[in-house]
Length: 262
Ligand SMILES: NC(=O)c1ccc[n+]([C@@H]2O[C@H](COP(=O)([O-])OP(=O)(O)OC[C@H]3O[C@@H](n4cnc5c(N)ncnc54)[C@H](OP(=O)(O)O)[C@@H]3O)[C@@H](O)[C@H]2O)c1
Image (cartoon, rainbow, N blue to C red; front, top):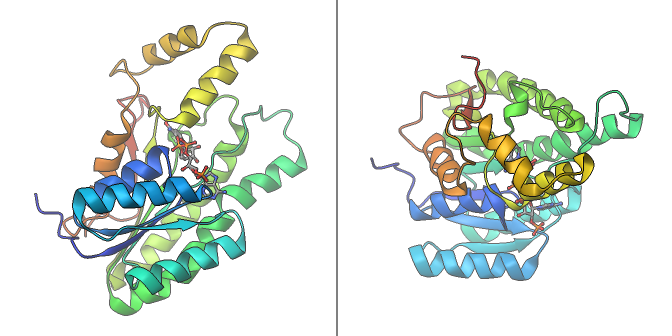
């Protein structure tokens, strides 16, 4: 299938590793000009150079801390200056620290909003007006299966991502007439550094091995394995594509069947 997005410009937040990188790769493979963004300048440069070599799409590297207003502003400015107006905005960022709901502090609750809602809202605020004017846009947020079924011991994540989901669903209806789609893609357990860290933390907390934690985790997934980042990237590229024009306001799970509800 031709995804019809060759030559478009994408800002992929937090794309120097994990899921963001997988999305940047999948979009580049479709001929999209991608801004690779993260705090690690050298890593971003290396990835942008690799993508350019592989797909000849002119990917660029941007060093930015996307949890700060300055970082967000400079990421948008540099993308527009080097690649042109942003057609595809992929919202992604660091995951919050684990923790139980019963012991959440007021700082933790504030952090859920600071980390998981505010930066995404700020990016959208800067990019959406241009998309609406040009009457084409794709906004895709990396979420979590915790949006559908809150995950144990990830109270900050469950709280912040649910708030983001509510905001994006509201937005999707407001901008549909401008041919801008707004969706979420919800990973279950995709094999990235973050998931490896969470498994290590769980092993430590429960006094067991990482292997045992992974085995236990895989048993809960009907596919009996963690997802590959490439599988997540492929689903993301489709949601950002031209043929996905009638899909908006959805939260699509990419989880090997982990979440059992319809
Ligand atoms: N993997 C899963 O199965 C899964 C499941 C549910 C939810 N999630 C969520 O999906 C998101 C991505 O997860 P992941 O597994 O891809 O994580 P990851 O492997 O840890 O990658 C995180 C990426 O975010 C970048 N980053 C971190 N802090 C940043 C900042 N302040 N500004 C800009 N970039 C920043 C990192 O690059 P730099 O170090 O270069 O900044 C890296 O590229 C997280 O929010 C995570 O909680 C993932």
